[in-house]
Image (cartoon, rainbow, N blue to C red; front, top):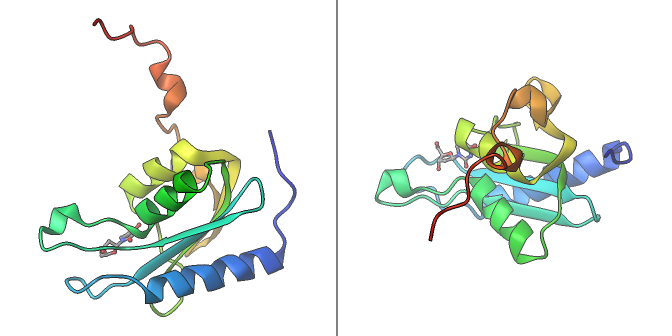
Amino acid sequence: MSFPAIDEATWTRLHHLACEAAEMAYAPYSRFRVGAAALVDDGRYVSGCNVENAGYGVTLCAECGLVSDLIRNGGGRLVAFACVDEQGNACSPCGRCRQLLYEHAAPGMLLAMPAGRMTIDQVLPGGFGPRDLATADPIEE
Ligand code: THU
């Protein structure tokens, strides 16, 4: 499956949405505000910001909020993604978030990385996904 080329206006919109989301971040501990935005295969946009916690490990990355927004508003496949810091610089998704995005990515999903645009398979080669569970024995009840 593939999708139409993502034009520059779409990347600009994703960047703006991610910057807006970063402004809403709750990051009193790291002071590192992150915003993420993505285009869904049906044309919707979804976004999220990081939400930290006094229990530091409980922190939710911006991508967690984005995926929650995606599912809450009907699901679908992510086709293009941007993540920024407070200054609007492209931010590299952490390893856990690459896995989170992989689950909901359209084949060939593009990410605006600090080094330029990359596909989901470039940022998470050989990723583990739903298909890898297909061979598991059903849970015995
Ligand atoms: N952070 C994200 O929101 N997404 C990432 O992919 C990288 C890290 C947040 C988590 C934490 O609130 C702050 O950045 C510093 O690690």
